[in-house]
Image 1 (spheres, rainbow, N blue to C red):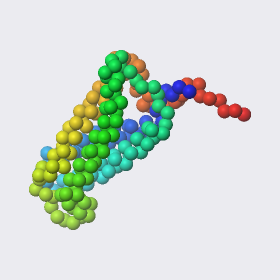
Image 2 (cartoon, rainbow, N blue to C red):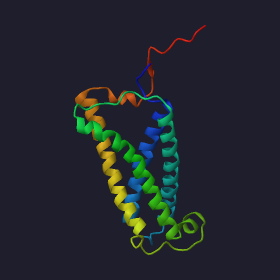
Image 3 (cartoon, one colour):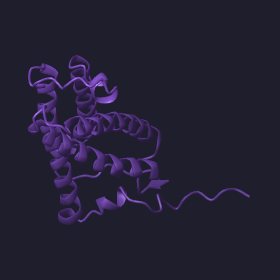
Image 4 (cartoon, rainbow, N blue to C red):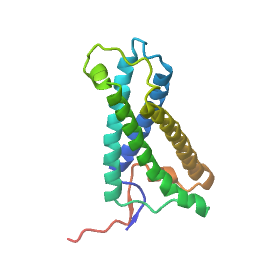
Length: 185
């Protein structure tokens, strides 16, 4: 049985995570430029932190679904080095997201953010998050993750429009298999 597309749950998780990750990165970069004394920062930070937790949960679900479902054959570029790098970068996404959530969570704990952001303690945010090494790591990881997203999009566009191998269809909805087995009567 030849699989043409990824499982519909994997497709749904892929596109949902794409939107959430780009949104979290965008909000995170804006938050980094916003002074901690800014009145509305706590509200935006709450959404950013909750979004990070949701992204982690969905990434874990996606990883499990990916391991448990049939997949199409690996897409090839025609360049052996790039073909060897592709799976590394795909699993690199999982690692980067895990590290992003980990450094964000660690920064939150160290800076006392759960009480401030979610508990309504009324305490102010720290003067700056830059004093926390975990926050500095979070920022560098965000830049690397953003670069991975850009490379991922460029690679997908290359496959779709230069190689014309129909890559986008693999991460879409529709018939998954060629000549599915006929059930015995």
